[in-house]
Length: 276
Ligand SMILES: Nc1ncnc2c1ncn2[C@@H]1O[C@H](COP(=O)(O)OP(=O)(O)OP(=O)(O)O)[C@@H](O)[C@H]1O
Image (cartoon, rainbow, N blue to C red):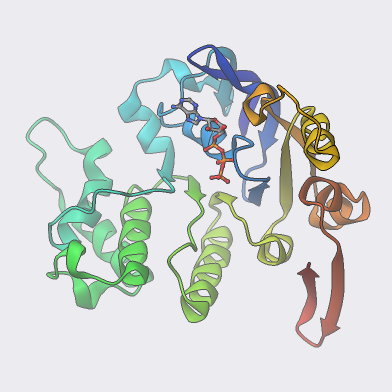
């Protein structure tokens, strides 16, 4: 079980997250939703040290996660960040092998098991045929699968993916969500950040709906056209609700946070939600 206890993050004295307490349940797909800038990325980046926790603690299976070494952390939780501005000019297989770094010794020599895990990750994500191709020559969608394979090669029980479908076309997204369901079946705990509310409702066991605390006064000031000194950054991110998709929909929290409304459609394959 992964647990955030009263976690706050500030950057240059600006509060980004305030007093977040949150539990991610094992074996579930949990999706973090929230408007731009509410702190979703900052929240998950507390797990790989890219965001510095300024107060509070994170526990993984009862262990103080922030006290263990970065290498040990990388054996527990693999995280695929949202923005990858630098695309390495190396062959696909070599990039996927980077997922094994937390397990390698000083010589970085790979064992037979490391190679098998890398091959399995590439087969799972259907990128074996690109093994020798350079990553920077691939399309955005295939490249995304390569990064996903690298994350899987890390072979962690906890997988965190920040906006993983950004570069994927419709087929690519469908395949991606099928892979996520398969990983859940294998017992992995999946944490996603998504902007696609319909998919989030469909695929998740639990939704974490975030907002900027007090941002209503900002919206009201903007709506009224009043001159206001209030800025978005005056409101650190907080949790609006953590619950099943059904309960989040019924409570209207999604409508409030995203200022949207939704419609439900049903067919033989299940329920679909349309947000407008
Ligand atoms: N290094 C930094 N220094 C100062 N402010 C930062 C830094 N990183 C993020 N922020 C600010 O923290 C807030 C939260 O950013 P974050 O990227 O976590 O939001 P998000 O919910 O993931 O947004 P999006 O949906 O647009 O990806 C934003 O106001 C952002 O400008």
